[in-house]
Length: 234
Picture 1 (cartoon, rainbow, N blue to C red):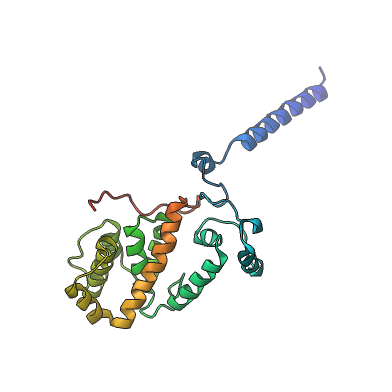
Picture 2: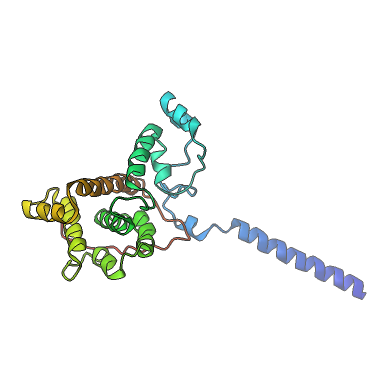
């Protein structure tokens, strides 16, 4: 057999091997997609598929049509878009509170991030937590303070305002009320107006966070889960 024929046969064998590898890779599912529960959409990573105009009533379609970006993706925006008028209302509330960056929150970004993390921890909302722990660190929220919230630790040793805020929101979310002494401490540390704004921010993240819990929102593959599971007697 000539060297030319040998070279040709080797080329064919190599090409077939490459083709087989490519086909195998195309057939091999993405690791995360393969591990998703059967009711989770691979685009939105939740139980809600990408929205279409036909999913909405006439009023919803008008609001939907006015949107500049309806590209489906994981996250709270894809959940609330299923009710565009509700999403608009949340947007107005969010703008008043500095959502989502916290840059314009009246008490500053550090307090904003602490409020969000307390809320996310109390409802075990991984998507919110995994976004706002890094944001909190960038805003100057110290890791020991984050860890008190993250691991449901006692607030002893924290600065007075941080301790009061954590106790107040934990109590409100767990017991659905607060006592006179704790309310007085909150007002003394933050004032009545700012206390209301803190509760409004908590309520905003609580509402959207529980929606994401209901639709089993998963994290994008590039975002690590930073919130550990806890066993709490509630």
